[in-house]
Length: 424
Image (cartoon, rainbow, N blue to C red):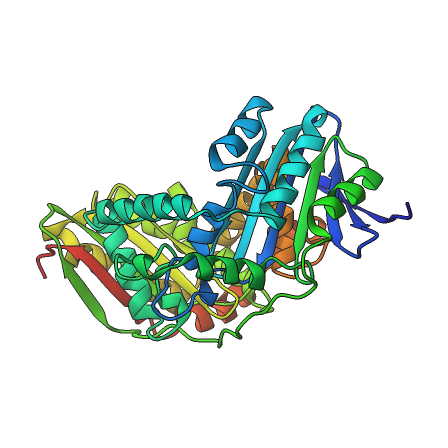
């Protein structure tokens, strides 16, 4: 077997590129510290491809992939996994359908064989579909009593009206009953293709074995997916405030401003600036002002939410109904202050020190390394990104964050959604 291997030395891991005989590119980290193998993979597609009126289809499909395959019923398939302590799971996000596999090396034959069956010969039995549908609907009914879920769903509906990102990934009580077995089969056929597949394998496995096992699991899939283009969209409703009344003593708040995509040259400065604003836990401005100084909330924060076709800076908190106006005023005030003055030199250096120092913590297990690598590959950041990332953060200057802040924070106006009974 001829396998092309290009080693790339990068902290916190040595990442190699393996091109399998079938032409599948795999990012590979070989480590024999423990006798296990972890694999993570992503197909292009996800919930953004759900047809109108059938929200939740991608997530339903993902949940059904390990509910029986080939000759094995759902119970038999899970029994084979359990007998050998194999962990196999599938999930769907807004832009991807993917999965993870973890196995002891001595059970690799069985593990990769079951992965192959799940991908190539899923049964999608009607009984399993009905059971998964019933579980999803029961979960939705429970979640709709939760202010956090209600606020998040309304937030995305207002942020991306008429766009796939505005529709709940998990579906609705109206859309889930409309999903048929034919829909599941069609989505699987459209998205489970090797042409735009990203794969990472980590553990006690050599490059030639990686190539053989990945081809065994994925090579027989169709070459290219059949996807509908998802139009790029901007955050809508900036400056608007929406209230969803729920009779609870504490209101949940979601707020958002513009964001920057991974590919934008100002993304890293925006990432650092977000850490100063609300991403730095105990050190962030919002945590200090909202929680520590005023006791308005137990938790508050912001993050950069980047999708294939949209990017936002979104935040969260929860506070007593009567203190909602004060919390919103403090959040808006800190955003305005950061927008007008930028961070201090000390804040910038502390943010960069934390972000570079904590980065290796995301690579402390084989499963985490595989998941991180496949996400980096999915975002087209390059196989050397792990090596470059801390240098990119360290190079950020005050001018960089001010420039990124002007784009990210804009004029300070936010889209705000509140679920509860706020005293406004």
